[in-house]
Image (tube, rainbow, N blue to C red; front, side, top):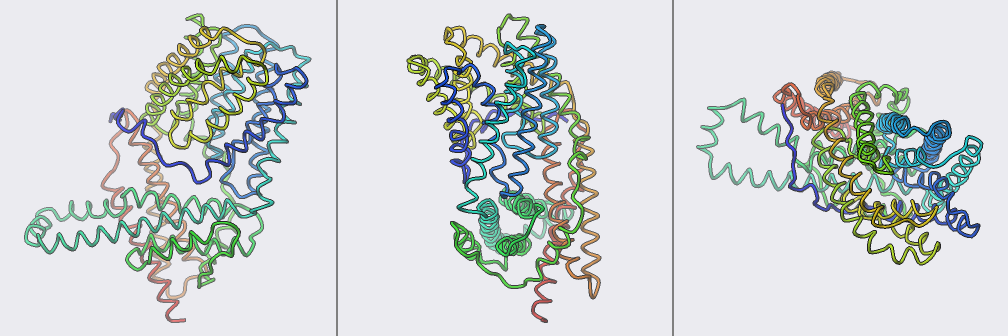
Length: 567
């Protein structure tokens, strides 16, 4: 099958993230002291190395602070490792072809590891930007340890910056994730109840025609109803938000009473998705509002609801490297696209082929349709961004201090805007990247603009062509695997429902596993639907699995309430 390549909606602005200001402020606070120190010392030429560590402040803002601390250490180690490989390669060879090849391989490894560990956003792009730029920086082998030490020092400061808010609001990430799940569940309940009311009216007005249609096409009507109930945008958003909240709350570590109270609220959101008709959305919204600040977490009944959470936490965690196999086609796309983009840039005589390489690396998403959309966003953002650079250059060239302050402003703007749409953030990323190249000395703006435009177009075109050539046949296999997981989880849950006295927590754990499997199935179907040259997806089986899965989830809620009434 062929995926469509849309233009409508690609540049549409979304709502800003709830915490858009946190990464924006964090990166400014992380970048400013090292850069201002280098400015005072007259060594702005070393800013690229401190920036490598400072930009780690962009990561892990949605994670609890204990998990964030660990994640940031791994990000910093990954950043320094990529930088070290690039600097050693740059010191050992001057061959641009070899350096582009090394950059492409690094980009593929960074893409695969970031996707497998789900470390983004911003994912691998920042790592690839730093390592690719370092490949073309003049370097001697004896200088490498000192430059890596600068990156580590700046990274340690970035770690402190990202952990500092935990002193004021220690459960902030968990509270935000839980509130988002509650609000998404409330929106789903309202949309579902409104649809039920419209359906009731429509059925009363068109009873005869509806009955005739049902009798003529019973299977199709039932499948359509199941697809509608399971696949509405509100349903997808709500289930994804609930799973994101569980992902945040189920991180390993000590479970405080606050965390357990938040887990109970996520259970209530999960129950609302299974039984919307019996849920008051106003109460869900009130609970979400109460999670702002550091006030007490609203209490809900039924502490035994967390038995399933206890069971899940007792199970061994799935190793992240199991996800590397399905990511192989995406890694091959990244390596091939980045290499060809860099070679094409060299063939055109552009002085900075790593710009084309990074452009290609930034395109690759879960499927070719999303890759196309990201390519359009990247090109539009860069085209507008070079115009912004042209307007800002006279101010930035007033002095080194003005140059640093302009970069800081664009750092803030990029993170503040990119959550609304990638192209909007690129408007700030592009001039920032151009200004960073001038830390070692001012350059002719016209040449910088021309090279950036050429590399953007080369990287976008060549990178997308590589995505079209390297097909991801495994996307369909993942759908089959996800279907099997949903069916097995549903059967296990149904079997526990049929037992008179299931083990404590077993049914709740089975419910959570089924909900997670349904989310994974929907993600797999959407990824495969956006790929080219795929065999036809088993749409009827998917609809059947989703419909029965959601019905089984609703049955677990009814079972739980019946037990509560008996108690």
